[in-house]
Length: 456
Ligand code: OOG
Ligand code: NI
Image 1 (cartoon, rainbow, N blue to C red):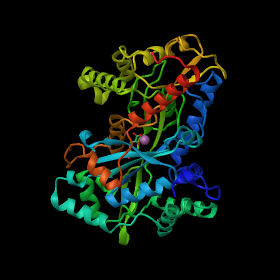
Image 2 (cartoon, protein in one colour):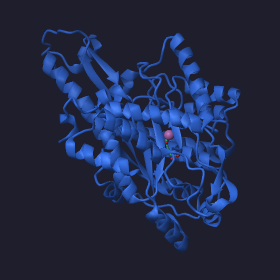
Image 3 (cartoon, protein in one colour):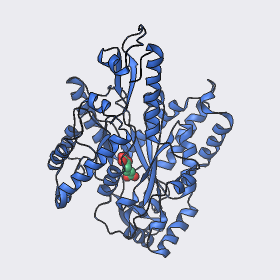
Image 4 (spheres, rainbow, N blue to C red):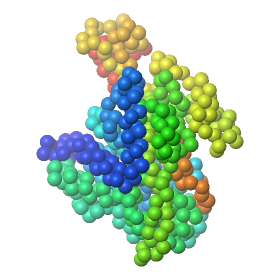
């Protein structure tokens, strides 16, 4: 039975996702206390912004994390996590190839897809999968794959409950609570490595990410990300609170009409680890805290303009980027982004961003002579920006790199392997452009149906 046909004796997937998100957040705050400090800072900044009159996006669901991230080792882990997340109402959206940026993984984001599910709980998980074929040393590649081959990251109770949910159409309250409890086991930190010290060092020398993915019993959650209403204030606040931020805020510059996604994080902690059999201790960097601020979703045309301007900025920055501080970077970025229209009307008329349309009043007299645009101008129809709910591969790569520290790298760059990724996943990923387009189109059709107006 499909999940949307569930009867009321089952716990709604949105509710299970909410419970999972809050359990994960509690666990992570205990595991990484600095993350708790970041959450406190975010709450302070959000309070200030709200006291000053709020932000562009409705200030709802501020207290819950927007996303987290894990890194998986083998296709069968990805296939099963897709089934687990589906029980929580999260579906794979987007394909992100990070190999072009020297990070040997590709990824998707498991997320709620309907507006009501996003409003109920927006939590999503950026999930990457190792691409072992990018490890140059054939012997080490073999070794990494055989370590992963033996690894089981899911608790048997989780496997059983996911199968049951699929067969019967859902889980009752007791089963949902058990699922959340045992699913946490997969995301927990393991202080003792899965491999001996020599192997760990070899993996790390190839790429720190390879050690992080193959060196442990499970894909520990590596960050959680609450939403902040003023990310520039939060970046400064981190410095003041002694939370070491990454060098720059990723993504577009600050604007009156925010676009896409801006993100920053504190640098991953160096944490003590042990090796099996009481061998000497080591240290490992993987876990951090991140904050994000979301703007309007861009059309393909708008997204291309965004990429072109980022590329232009990279060229303008030239050699200065590595030592650039955030203030300089943001100032340059703002200048480079001058050509990107910064009013909702221009973004809409230029078909650069997605909007949904609705009536300003409950009842309307038919407007057969008018166009949609005229009704907007008359104040009878409202155009609301659609929030970008996805990720940016270049920003993600920046987040990855800032957390790996100085490292050598013995992995290759690769070409995009979406079909292979989807084969591991067991299905195709959703195309987010198509999803936003559909939301926009459905709302236009509804306004046309209600008013009889012309499209344009
Ligand atoms: C994931 C980094 C990507 C984001 O917000 O872009 C990400 C990772 O470090 O595993 O979470
Ligand atoms: Ni993130």
